[in-house]
Length: 527
Ligand code: AHR
Image (cartoon, rainbow, N blue to C red; front, side, top):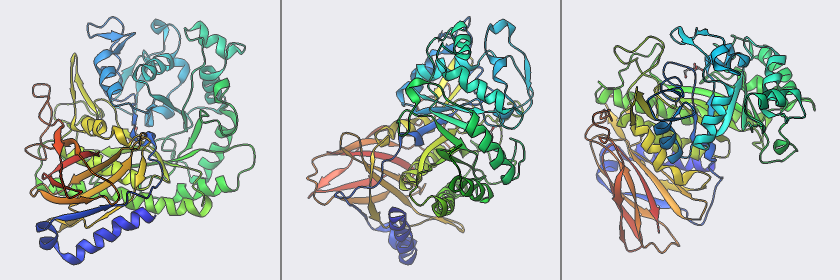
């Protein structure tokens, strides 16, 4: 809370100064280099891959016989790109898809797997070629932990329990023997187990009380048998994530956290999920490419709501969990625009522009400021769907501006938050107002200090002066992401329109002067 109030204080100070005063002078940023806050959990950089459109089929899975280079059916270009951004965990198989997924459809001889219809997403044919074994192969190839969501909406306790046993039991157990017969002798590790998805909506439209009853039974019976994940306090232990709030609706937050506080020994959770998309209203009509400054300002302002939402749900969680043992896991977030013209209904295909990069950076900074409660997040979605890191079209692949922000933020994975204060100033378009700049500092796992800076203003550069008391600064260098326009995109033909470029601050009398370009994201290392 302390760090948040510093930020809010900066905003309030800016409001009293007025836009002109704040915009024309240098913005001093004081980094409290001697202090440290919580660890910024690397899992806030998690991703989400649902059976939706070409998110899996085409985007990740091309099949073993494809001319597209692949390892056991998983496309190699996508794996290489994702490995480079150290995806900490990947959530699968949904989304709404998860509550209609029956895991037995996706194991065994691929030729004999059931063929079903993806009723949630465009009615496409689901041949179950990508099932449990293929998912773990993919997660292992990219080096990510598995976040598996079990079917609460249309499944049974027994089905979910059997799936978790199949994934985690060793071969003394029939479940483990069946897995071994299908090609995987060693039990897999499940990093996170989602107990349903959006049970207040597509996951069954349950009243909070109904969900809490389901949670208790699923929480008890989905036992993880992996010997490496046993024991209280085991850092490898599987974390069970309960369905939590839909954006600003607090009913699930209240009900689940109250139940958690009053729990007996039979069940628990290790996380509460929250979903919140950056969208002006559903159904989404805003275009992902053809937009002007008004839509830029609206979306950017809308994404800043994430800070208020986290604060609001955290305050409710604090009533039941003042020690912040239960993390808030924002396991679906990102921009949601109108579908690309010509793309199939229900495939949620959109382009990704510099605006999305700014949205991503702002959200990472918000999560970092709430690092004592937010210890996981999954951007929606990994490939080809909503605010994707990667777009593919058959053999072609392009990395999006959002991908590059993930790359720039690598030093923040498991870094320690360092408080700072600044006068954010104000960016205004019509009657839409928001802070002009945003900043977060953190020390990486080697102790090096990093500062992320975002200039939200699409028209004006921001002169900033970083004061780092007690630090003998020799160098300040890193990377900067910007482009000619807020709607600049990377396309298959022009993949390098929005890519990070080297960036330097000027070290002057122990401070760092930065000229932060309009509409940019910067990550600076202080040496
Ligand atoms: O990410 C797309 C969908 O959005 C997910 O399937 C669902 O959980 C959410 O409503």
